[in-house]
Length: 243
Length: 99
Ligand SMILES: Cc1cc2nc3c(=O)[nH]c(=O)nc-3n(C[C@H](O)[C@H](O)[C@H](O)COP(=O)(O)OP(=O)(O)OC[C@H]3O[C@@H](n4cnc5c(N)ncnc54)[C@H](O)[C@@H]3O)c2cc1C
Ligand SMILES: [Zn+2]
Image (cartoon, rainbow over all chains, first blue to last red; front, side, top):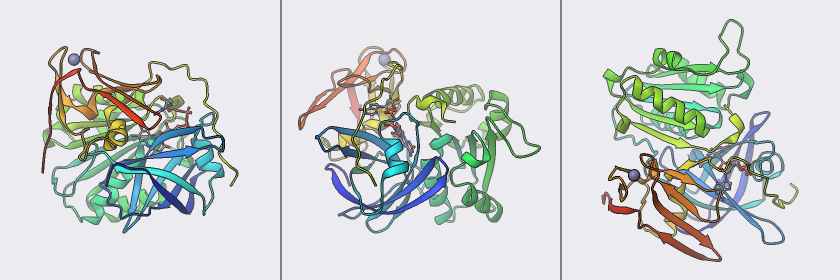
């Protein structure tokens, strides 16, 4: 589905962390979501002023719903409103889901390595869910860099999936505070190399997060021997170092 | 559920960029199929890669897509007042997968 803007109803809200929440939207048309796609969301002020931002779809809710998960950027123009003020029954304009490149398709049976920083985990969560739904036998790994355990969106779902599933592996990088006994520090080339699927396995790799994070990780992956055309990236912009 | 009023913040990071993925929405207004997955050949340096992989600068009135290899302008998209002006002249070619 593409093209026009649709008016979507906010039909559900769920706090994920103190600064992030999931917004369930219902569209007036059927919605088909590929894991990794995003929507554009448009807000209009009473005086007619408008702003558009992109948000990855964290889950498709057939036949006409989807969820997005928004992390508040404290001085942001749009995200604080979405995280703090938007209520069930409100309406927003939505374009999409769109995007045919940063997507994981169940037909692809390669091993998959996902690498997310901060809210960059959102489209990767959609891929994890789709991979589980398809009962794929190929290995799936997620390396997730967050400020602290409390800031990790989808933490419980990811940890229980990692425990229950024979194919899904989860690795955390904590940049500010970590649970007892675990290291604190930014992701670096060495940790990345020790954590991700080996280039010999030729995994499909998806990297998402703030632009600086994506840039660094993509460079290290190439240094590790991964083919550039196996690495797909999605940059969220500066976002004040949100990961 | 207070009303959204909008208040564009000062943005210092003018060289902050996104990637061509973020053009999927605006381009869906113009094309029936997704163009961000198409392979584009840069008219300046000949580099060939997905439109989604190029660097997108949005902190200007028009969105500008630049080649990650040489920095050459690939595409300009100006959406204002219910009109889209799309300049694709930075590409010599687009290869589009039709399934
Ligand atoms: C494809 C994509 C998917 C995303 N998915 C998510 C997600 O799932 N969850 C999440 O929390 N965030 C996501 N983001 C980031 C999100 O779009 C916003 O940038 C973020 O919410 C901050 O917006 P703001 O208005 O609060 O902040 P602001 O400070 O007001 O803006 C932050 C950034 O928005 C960019 N920007 C400014 N004007 C425009 C414009 N006209 N068009 C496009 N960008 C502009 C600037 O680069 C700026 O750095 C995604 C971004 C992209 C590109
Ligand atoms: Zn070029």
